[in-house]
Image (cartoon, rainbow, N blue to C red):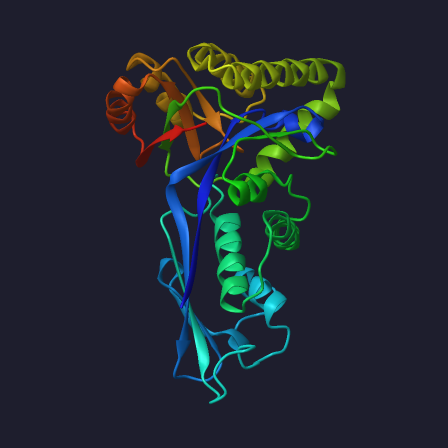
Length: 315
């Protein structure tokens, strides 16, 4: 048997402005994981068991562009190969995938499954891969399904480290000066990031000078946040979150549900709060003192959050 796991991720600062060349910050969420196990099977072929998406099927029955098939075909390029280097009796393998990361919620569920699956397959086949190789392959998979992704998701998840990203520049990981705690609140509303990005583009096209200035403000907030996190001054991050959320509201990518959760977190004692990701639904985040995390989590549920996650980002 071979197994591997990968964490989720959350964006702290810079969403939407990152599309226009400004920096963004993202961190791993280790309280949720995608887990993959690979076992020898008495059945011929390669079988996939992913109960979270109600999938139990043989690889060759899946479309070639299916997200899981895309990864597996990188290791088994033929339609129905025997597992390389494994039993000579014609037996196959079973790939079991279980994830606690909510799908389509901005927590990187797709990239986490890809990273865990790549690591489990490489281990099963005895093909050692470096983090750089895993990350590069995971990014290939992301591109095949999302067109032109930033690369943030696969990098944060592969290295399980905070990432500072500027479009067109090499992605940088950075260190955390002191542990800090955030609470994530899920609106339970699915929203297409592509639509929100398109609406911001319409605003930008109509008044480039105004929105370039706004994006500059978001970029400066992200830079300040990185510096404060590196210096261990997380208590000063909350106000930056509030500023960033106000700018995202101006971009029309917040929603009544997100604003309700953000306000609920602040009233419960959070140092600051903002939406995270594409907006219009999905998740928000709150910076909290550790002793107030449970109270903020409870307040978010009272304000309508379908689920909350308390996570600590460690050095």
